[in-house]
Length: 334
Image 1 (tube, one colour):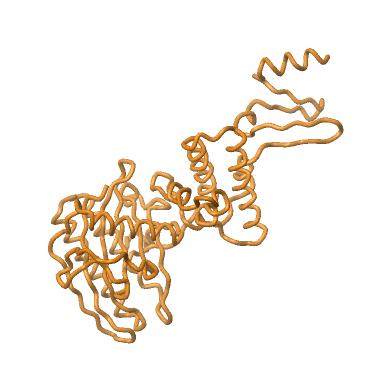
Image 2: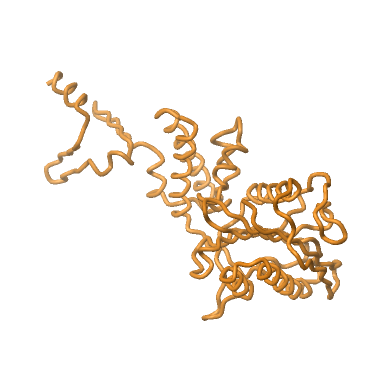
C-alpha cells in the first residue's frame, strides 16, 4: 500500500560542474489511479532489472548521510518529516552529481509503502527522456506509459533494518552512464553485500510457497525444485551469477512474469542477482538418490534426512518413523 509519495527534479547537463534543484514542498496524493500506476510501474521495472542486495557503508562509527536522515524520518514518521527527508536527500544527490561531470539530471521519485506489514522506502532516478508523469510544478498528470528503459538507478530500503544496518536492508540497481562513476550508490551510501547461502534458502522457501499457492502435487513440486537445481548447477559450472529473471524464465516459461512477481515480493527478501549458493544449501532442492548393487533408495531430504542414521563400523543404516505401508510391504517379501 502506497502511503507517501513525492517527486523532485535535478537539472544537470553532461560535462557540467553545476546542477540546480527544483523541490516540491508538499506530498503528492497517493489515492489516485495515476499515483498507483506510476508506483507499480516503477516497482515492477525495478524488480525486472535484478537488484542486488546491500547494506549501508559505514566508516568507523559514522553512518552515511542518507542513512542518518532516513533514520530521523523513520523516528518522526510525519508528513512534514517525509518532505524534509527527501529535501535533504536531494541536497546529498546534488553534491554527488556535481562531482561527476558525465552525470545528467532527471526526476527523483520517493515513495513510502507497506508490504506484509513492513514499511519500505523506494527511490528512483528517471532520466528526462523517460517522459515521466509530471507537469512543470511536479504534479502528477495523465501521460503515456513511462519508458522504463530509462530507469537506470533505484533503491528499496527496508525500514526495520535501517538502525541495525542488516545485510539486505538495501536492494539497488545502478547502471553507470558512460564516463560517470556510481554516484547513485554513493548517494545512498551503500555497498553490495550478498550472502549466497541465505539467498538459496530464501529461494527454496519462495518456490515451495509458489508450489503450494498453485496447488502443485508432489511430482510437480519436485520438478520445480529440480529445475531450479539444474539452473544453479549451470550457473556454478560457468561462474555466472543467478538472477530471478532467469530463474522465472527457466522454471515457468509459459508465464515467467507471474513467477518473477512472486519471487520479487518484499516478504521473500530475495536479491535480483546473487552468486550461486553452496552445494550444501542446494542439495535440499533435489531428492537423495542411490541406485547400485541391486538396491535403489530415494527420499526427500527435507522430510527424511533427520530420520536416517548410519553406523560406519557395522555398515548399517536405520530409518525411523517409516510409513506402516512400507513395513507391511517389506514384511510380505521376507
